[in-house]
Length: 447
Image (cartoon, rainbow, N blue to C red; front, top):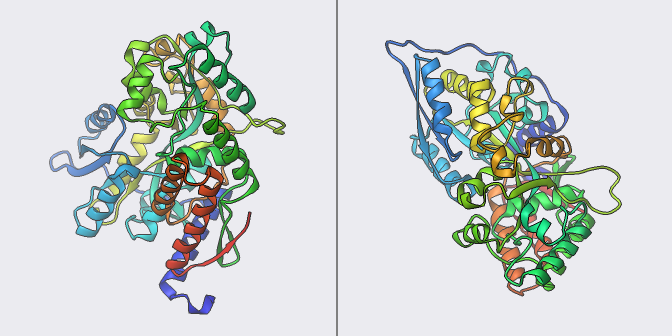
C-alpha cells in the first residue's frame, strides 16, 4: 500500500511524524537567530491575531520597548470556534497576519496545510528560554515554525463556600467526585457539581489523556490510531454513569447558560485549564472570594499523580506569507518570554507559562488580580503541580479539526441518547482512520 501513496502525502507524513517525535523526545535544537528590530524612522508593521483577554497590554509594552516594530492586535474567536478557519483562509488568500495564536494541537494541521513559515534562521538561542516539550511543539523536522506561549494544565475549580456549607471537601479521586456530585444533588436540587461539556473536544481529550493511554502515534511509516483503548473506555464509562445518574448537567460550557449557572451557583465546579481562572473571574464577578482550585481528581489505584493539558496549550505561530519573518519571530519570542509580558498574560488568563525560568514571574507568587477572587489562594501552586504531571509524549494528528468535529458530534449524540460515550469514542477512532487514509497516509489501529 505504501508504494501507492502520493509522494507529497508521504512527505507530509514524514515531516509531521518526525516533528512530533522531536516534540515528544527533545529533538534537535533549533539553529540560531538574528535580531530584526527594525528602523524607528520606518518601523516594521506586523499584525497579530489572538483571543487572549487583555493581551493588548502586552502588545503595547512590546511596541514601547521596540520602536522599530509596530504590532497591531486583532482579536478573533478562539481557534476551534472559527479562528483557525479564518487563519487558513487568510493564508490561502495571501492576506494572513504575521503572527497568530494557534494551539499546540493544531500546529500539525497548519503545517500540513502549508500555513506555517519556517523561521529557523531567526530563532537563534531561543530554545533555551522555554520548557523543552513546549518548545518542541513548534519544531518539525528540526525546523522552527512557532514560539510556545503557554500550556493549559487541568485543575478543579469549585465553590468552596458551598462545598463547606454542604460538608464537602475537594474530591481527591474520581470516586470522590461522583460521591460529592450525589451529595450536591441531594442538598440542592438546582445545583450540579459540573457539566458534561460535549461541545468541548479538547476537554474530553484531556480527560482521556489523564486516564492514560494516548490516542495517536507512529508505527513504521504509518499513523497508529488507538482512541478506542481500555483507559479511554474506562473514562467514558465513568462519565456515562454520571450522565445516567443525572449527577452532571448536560450543558455546553462557556455558553451564556453556563455563565449564568456559574453566577447563580447552579454549577458549582469545573474541570478546566489553568487559563480558566480568567473565564470564571470575567463571567461570574459577583462570586469573588468564593472559589478555590484543587488538583484534577485521580483514578483510584494510580501509581502516581497524573494530569492533562487542555489542547496541549497555545503557540505564537508565524504564518506563511509574512514579509517580516525576523520581526515576527522577535515579537513572538518577547511576548512569551519577557517577564513584563508573561506577568501580564498570566493574570489575563493565557495559561501556564512556557518560559523555563519563572524566577522573575512575580505574579506566580503574588497576584492581586487573581488570588483575591479565589479567597486568597495561590492557585498557581496547583497548576504548577499539574503542569509537571502532564504526559509530554501525547501526540496530535495532522487532522485535529476533523478530530474535534467528529468527537463533538459523536459525544453530543450520545448525550442525547443515541448510543453511549464509549460508542462515541469508538466511532471517532473509525472516523480518524478514514480521515488519515483520505490524506494518503498509512494507518494501523490498536486499543
